[in-house]
Amino acid sequence: MDNLIIETRQLTKVYGEQTAVNKVNLHVQKGRIYGLLGRNGAGKTTIMKMILGLTSVTAGEVDVFGQNIKGNEKRIYPRIGAIIETPGFYPNLTGAENLEIFAKLRGTSNPNAIKNALEVVGLPYKDKKIFSKYSLGMKQRLGIANAILHDPELLILDEPINGLDPIGIAEVRKFIRDLCVEQGKTVLISSHILSEIALLADDIGIIHNGILLEESSLKELQKKNSKYILLQVSDTAKATLILERKFHIKEYSVQDTHTLHLYDTALDIGEINKALMLENISVTGSQFCNDTLEDYFKKVTGGKGIA
Ligand SMILES: Nc1ncnc2c1ncn2[C@@H]1O[C@H](COP(=O)(O)OP(=O)(O)OP(=O)(O)O)[C@@H](O)[C@H]1O
Ligand SMILES: [Mg+2]
Image (cartoon, rainbow, N blue to C red; front, side, top):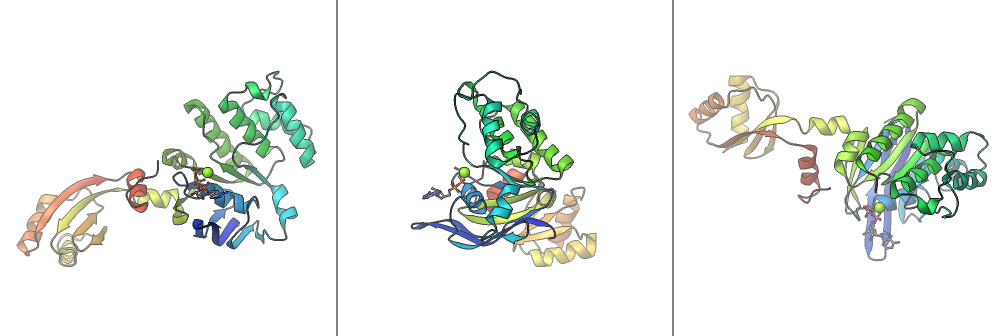
């Protein structure tokens, strides 16, 4: 994989007796949206905090922009925008006033930075409403505006869609995608909601009990969940020989000694059953399947599911 913006190697965090993050090798590519998907307590926030230097690393390494974070903090962190948990805004100031403070702290020189950031997240610039009167969704948006204020190349957003209504979620999804497509930004985003990640991310990492179970592009994942015919037979080795020789079937996978998946769903199952029986292979079941991503995640996370 070329052009890695974040790479972790064997990244590990131990809290007392508990290994919250266990030897994680994460690969976030330039200009892409990487969705870190996992249930509550999976280790998403801890990974992000370690990347951002907000908590110590027990073992392993983190590279950001091709440099190890150790010793390069001053070069790396100004190029990142992040929301981890709720940012501390002043309750008695408006959104724009809050952002002015953060802009000054960060030395943001662009005079239009605040206006631009608020526009991206869909908050009014000239609004008298103070932060304490904001709805949860508005607070979330201001958090994102704050993260993009200094025009960072990399955004690390921990569950940015929590608390948003469905329209808000769609809007946030759109502007995150625009930041990526139009401005070439790289995004690492976490969520425990599979459908959200599936609609937004280019690449997905599934984290479960601190372990990165799978890392792949959404396209690859979707391929694994195509339609297929599930065939249960007494002997898959013999059955595949017949399928290949007699029916010229090549698009299949052997799941275990008794289960086959045939990916050409236009096949005549009756004919196949007959041919197999003639060869003394008993067919104990056949059915059309259409696995969803949800089914897949349930499978990889040990049957418990994600969302
Ligand atoms: N400061 C801490 N001290 C001790 N244990 C912690 C600490 N922070 C997190 N943990 C534990 O580490 C594990 C991973 O937590 P983490 O917050 O990274 O999960 P998460 O995937 O972000 O979950 P959520 O979806 O609930 O935000 C959890 O079991 C949590 O209890
Ligand atoms: Mg978390």
